[in-house]
Image (cartoon, rainbow, N blue to C red; front, side, top):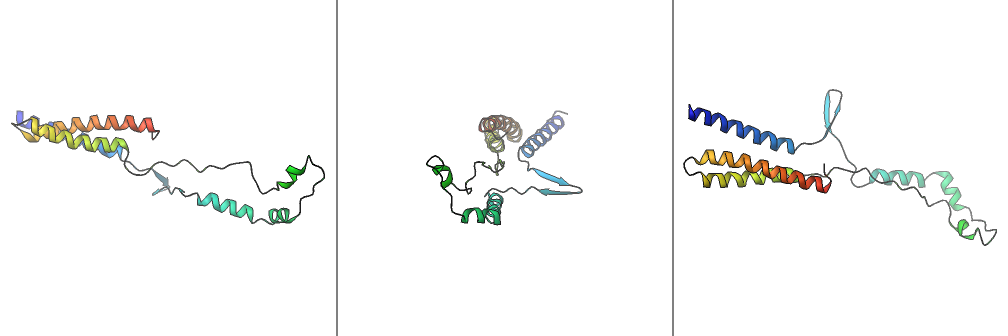
Length: 156
């Protein structure tokens, strides 16, 4: 009975560790009807460049730039020398989510590995049980520390 209870506990502990690990490594996906696709992110600002290029190629802008600026007084001299080519509005690219493993996922993986090794070394009678218990405990602690670091960095 004791061995059966111990094996059930071990399998449950492994499943909990795997679920926690998989939950920390998720990808964002957009659902379009019956399809699920990855959301493309413009990290280079190419869309912003294309919008700027289209604005520069408009005929009204080209005609305004080709006309010489009329200077009527010294007061309007500085405003006349600045043609309509400069814009005061600034468009910032959308904030993108960092790619790769989060610190929470790294912490869970490192903590689970280290905890498994330490648990196997400490429990000399049954190294497998020691490794499972140490792996679950280390993974939980590592995930907690990594999650705190992610929050501090602004990832979550």
